[in-house]
Amino acid sequence: MKQFLLILLCSHLAFSQVKYPKDYFRSPLDVTLVLSGTFAELRSNHFHSGLDIKTQQRKGLKVYAAAQGYVSRIKISHFGYGKALYITHPNGYVSVYAHLQKFSPAIEAYIKECQYQKETYEVEVFPSPDELPIATDEIVAFSGNSGSSGGPHLHFEIRDNAERPINPMLFGIDIDDSKAPVVSKVYAYPKNKNSYVDESKVRKELRLIPSKNGDYSVEPIEAFGDIGFGIVSYDQQDLATNKNGVSNIQSFFNGNKNLEVDFKRFSFNETKHLNRYIDFEIFKTKKSRIQKLFIEPGNTLSLFKDVSDNGYIKVEDSTSSVYKVRIRDFKGNETWLSIPIKGKKHKEVLEGESITPKHYIFKDQVNELSDRNISVYFPSNSFYDDFYIDFGVKSDTLILHKDIVPIMKNFTINYDISNYNDGDKSKLFIAKLYGYYKKPYYVRTTRKGDVLSARSKSFGTFALQTDTIRPTIKPVNFQDKKWLSKHNYLKVKIDDDLSGISNYRATINGKWILMEYDYKTDLLVYNFADNIIEDTEHNLKIIVTDNVGNSSTFEATFFRK
Image (cartoon, rainbow, N blue to C red; front, side, top):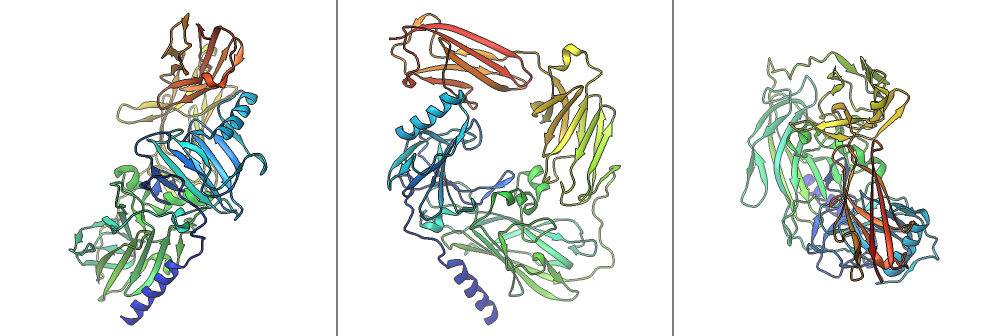
């Protein structure tokens, strides 16, 4: 018992060590900080790289520079971070502000000049240190909902000089949190054919028993061999109901620490291994992210430390032992899970599910599959394990396994379309089919001669689709040959039902104008404050093209003084 308490004390001291300046960065907003997302919480295919700060369901809150420095990068895109600003600070750190509505006047003028020079909305620029200096407490932007944001909020990051994101709370960004983390599910994983839990060789969910003090236990399990465990957990802060990520997980076997997962910092080139850290099959089939507290081959995450036997425990026959898990949030609130284990070796153990597919994938080799007019190419080291794969072709539909296997590299799908009429070939694309009704979604498709190619990083059902319908363009807040002197914006709705919008171009009296595109609302918006037009009569022309080249043109005349 003394040894166990000493381990806990030492781990607490290590967890509490101050490595980052706590009085250097200020809050980027002048409101009480409430989070909809915490640092390194589990997202689709990646760890979250910052804090998602609520903006009271509004856009337009003032965003302040976290410290003095200079704008080192500005990136504007339709998806992802949307409008994003990067500030480099004298201490070597970089702060990031994303999903913005707009920038401060000086930065806005700078980036609009770049957009008009390049005649494109999507830009990425890297100003020199003397172009856009930033003072302490300077307003640099206004919060918004741009890019792939699911609602108004500010995404805020702090990165080191190696571009690795670090939990901003380590720098003193404070969030009210007095609630301990919650454990909602727990699983046991026999490692191999010589291991089992309660006479089963496959993953087994254990029944959680909550205690009055907030901790958890399970009924004693019978096990033998090498066993790993996984949990589903989350944390809630005081002022929000969001189920956010936890900050630290530690496991102990009979009082000895055998693994820690510390969510302080990670690098972007490792974040893909989240899909190896979680039980990917359960996530895809049940939308639940089980954090596996053991390390499988290929999982090179730097979040792990103090690892013994890759996090597995060895259960011997006729023994009694206990496996414990401590889950902590950043403020030190903690929850314990206890799993009593009886070691028992059985004569016969139920086998796992049999595997029947015909094709086999070798993880460390190039793998190619083909049938009739369709082939699939997998680069070497695309997968973590060797496995049997479902592969089938029906007409122009490719059935490529179930989307339950984590994939590290893009694979390539090739369709030979030589049997199609020449007039139809230019309108073909490769789509992935989703849902019960197999709704097609465009996968970026290229053509070389009579071969269409698309790259993907997930299994599923793919098919050839034909798109012959042009995009639609409709004015929203104006009519042809009307006066618009009182309007601040020109709004147009664009849409394409099948392959999707590829690009657009808008001009007034032959001059290119910047129209911001929001794919969530299908709106193109021009701000008259850009002062591009000078005449009274204005001829607007918008050309919209979809992903297979179908194009529509909209023209209108309006008047403005």
